[in-house]
Image (tube, rainbow, N blue to C red; front, side, top):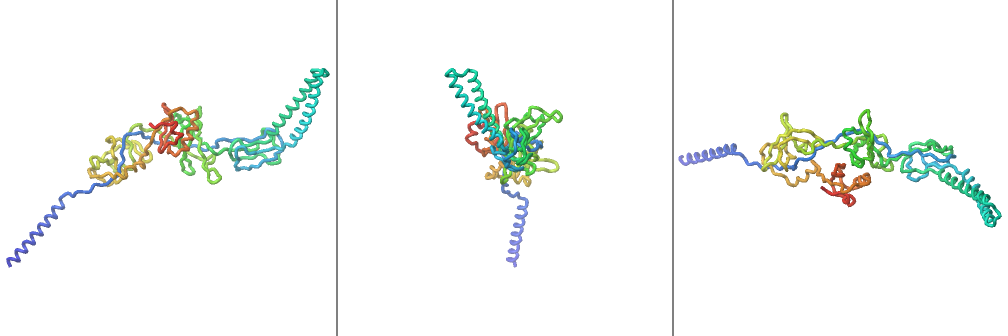
Length: 415
């Protein structure tokens, strides 16, 4: 009996100890594994947004085809909407009467030459006067001049296209009579195509000939790089805007150009809001009813930093905050973090900061280009991604991502 009671006592004591250990475990803080996070290293930099200005597309050139000589239209191969290559014959008038005149003049010239040679020999022998010689020479030169003028008219009977373009209007048909100087065919050049936009006076100083700017086509919502071709020297007094023309390459769908004159488009013009401020990813900010904050990594812990949002553009926010230089902003998992939580930076995702803020290289033009339009087109032909290209006091500045080709390296130096 005593042995049984002793065994029961030991079992009860052991159970009590286990319960005590369980109770102690409930109140003992457990060591949590550090939360893995992605970060973005930030420093103060320029912050800009963009203003959008609406406009429309127009042909880069148009031409009214007319003949310089009258006559019946003999050849007119192109109809409305047909594509015409530069140098192709658009209109040719019948030249039968001119050819007949030319034959008659050639006969007259032969007779004039015979008479001129005869009088020249007689003059050498003293059998003809100087006046007779002058008269024979004048007759010969007069016929020669008439032949030259007639040959010019024969060439003018054929009218060619001055550029690659499309027929947009025909005023005559084959067999009808063409009058000199009266338009017969209207041609339109669609590649390149121009975007026309009115820029407010307050922003026109940002635009110079040769600038590369982004134009959004409303029909497709596609953004294209264009080159400023012309900035008007006058302002519209009624609305205080300045007309600007931007040249765009017109892409093709099969044999048809995609961009058409009259289409609506808009220009995105960068506007600097802050030259030196804290710019962070907009989606890194945690929002509550009472505050806005982000988490940074300090001493391997998530540190809550309040931010005051001053402006936003796309996925960027200009903020005021108590940041340090080279601050690491947490950009993943921040919505479930608590202040002071141990964190570990996931090193493999540091380069993914490109998706939050573009890394921009800067280059300066070492020499002044005689033809800035040619230089701008060279940039568009390259593989680099251009963010901005503008004129400054020290020359042309290019903000880009990628590798410069040899032609651009000859003019640009990275800074």
